[in-house]
Length: 329
Ligand code: SAM
Ligand code: SF4
Image 1 (tube, rainbow, N blue to C red):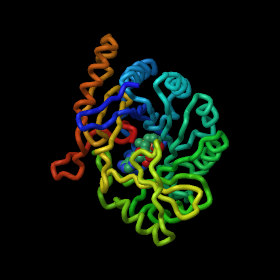
Image 2: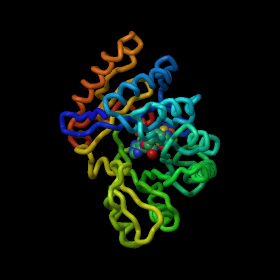
Image 3: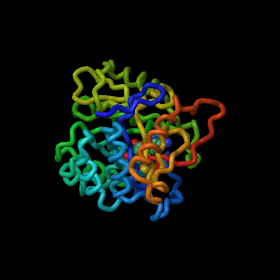
Image 4: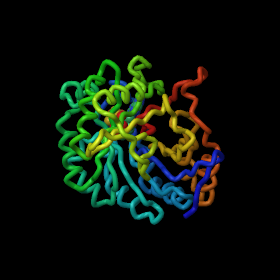
């Protein structure tokens, strides 16, 4: 298989595809309550365009795909896209990040379409608080969705939890302890106040180290050897626990030197860094009829310009204009 190596010797093999910037929830740390100015219908990449880009990227060395959004399960016929991507020879792994609300309906279809792994975002186990954080979401829908995913053989289920000071930090120990008896992975993702849409600032930020210190008061956390799909998370386990605990620390312990990712936004822009608004437009050349070779060259040039690291902690850093819901996290 072709290996795509960038200027900083990183092997680029992972493409995250945001299929929509729309969402059925309005998480307080992700979207303003009135929602965001949504990308016009005409500007959203059509499935055949996403497939074309994915096939070219796959030829260049992309073997892992994650479908994200907005909420990917709100896009019509999402199962057909997943199934088509799964049929691309070079694609070895296809996964999804979802808020889980529609998993009850889709888990079995996702499995049949060839989806390998599911990450579910869940920031509270308390009904009212879940509803507050998501501005109206129903906790039971997500819990039912998780059960359905398990019943359909998705294992392990990975739960993304964004710890927010003064909001859900009282639940960190409770959710971590779930891993003692269940084969789930709880991944604590540092809150990133990096988009202009964030009404929030650093007041809610909790560094991973602080969480780890708190959890170590419960029981020692033993490091888990890295596996192929661990991604940027540093994984640990309570002694004899069935599940695992991960820390994703883009701010306090960035992982730029091993970043293998590209991101395709719902309106067809290729982003080589989550925290940089420098994007390469793929949709316009695609719609203007450029051929495969030309598109391949555009993608290669973008990758060769992938920044060495993010600048979030530089005093000169300016917040990104695109919100997480349109980049896909
Ligand atoms: N709607 C899906 C979901 O919530 O899982 C997929 C898209 S969402 C943008 C992807 C991930 O980004 C979620 O796990 C969410 O918690 C995370 N996220 C969104 N905004 C964030 C922020 N400001 N800081 C940290 N994580 C964020
Ligand atoms: Fe929607 Fe996911 Fe953003 Fe929540 S985190 S508002 S579920 S896109």
